[in-house]
Length: 364
Image (cartoon, rainbow, N blue to C red):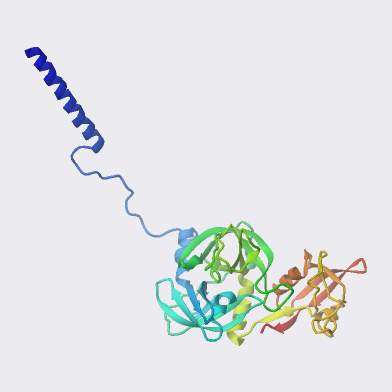
């Protein structure tokens, strides 16, 4: 009996010891658990990293809340100078109309009222000015002519009203002819852009925000997206990014911004012809009549002086193929009034080249 009792005690003791051992193994003894973690690091990042670019650019980026009598919206802009001029898209400020309100929020949370000093539908650009704000940091402007496909870029904005959002990607294509807004057919309410294409995610609310290069210089103004269920769209719907975003090249943006600041209006380069926007063939066809029933080629205008005639089909601009009237307008808008273009055209089944000096028209 004594032997049996000793065995029982040993078994019970062994079970208790095993349970305690398993508990200690699982919980690391009687001390509190403390997991290993990296220590504190310096906050700075390489200037050409996404974090470094964002840190440099964010203080110059603003969010615009626009409210009018019939519509409201959110967009983005960026500081052009210390005088308070901010560049954004026309379609961002359009809901304000003539009597609406524009509230400008800076990255640090400060707010100010903004006023439109100039806006242009055809370029989809606008300049807003704030007053009574000190310490403004202009965002440096780059040169969009230097951009190459594959270059890294960073987009900054307020997608879906989420301020100070940073996304990154590359330039996936250049000189993408896009039209957006209004009705097709060359109307004044259509925007024509020879755009930079990027896969950096851009969503509604990013409009007007900067697309910057690896040196935090603006190379484009984020303006349009291609959504899965529509064509190029100036963010009129709530569709999200599918990796096809479009930005107005900053070289064009700079010229238009300067004109809007200095005169309140932007000039548009023109060929001086009325195009047949219903032409289904390849190229841009000069119409048979003008919109007012007059001649399709304006007498004494750039096209007339270059020898263009009704029915001519323009197939190339400076050696670049154009496939439609919209593309010809886009290629024209990418230039300045006074620039010289070489047009390749077809007339009576024969190809010929003409040189044309672009005229100027008020964008109002």
